Length: 116
Image (cartoon, rainbow, N blue to C red; front, side, top):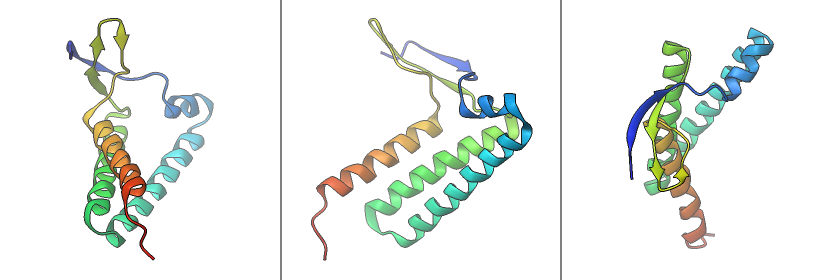
């Protein structure tokens, strides 16, 4: 299923769209994302159990992507999946953590018992 690992730097990201306009937009977007990360960290501190782990997964993936953005000035993606004629988009490990954390949060909200 996993054919190969391919290092790519996506040219379709929201950051690249803002970089073409003005640097202030790129910094503004980065600032908004950093504020969102602070909110996710706050949710992680206040939550318990599986919710805490899912927020920590989202936080870890977000911080990994921010680190790549600051250190490499891009977020390199390297996992490329092909299955027959199906080609999934290229992603990285941080994206996996964010996605799994969000899926756990959604499943937790759907299947948790009503607490009053």
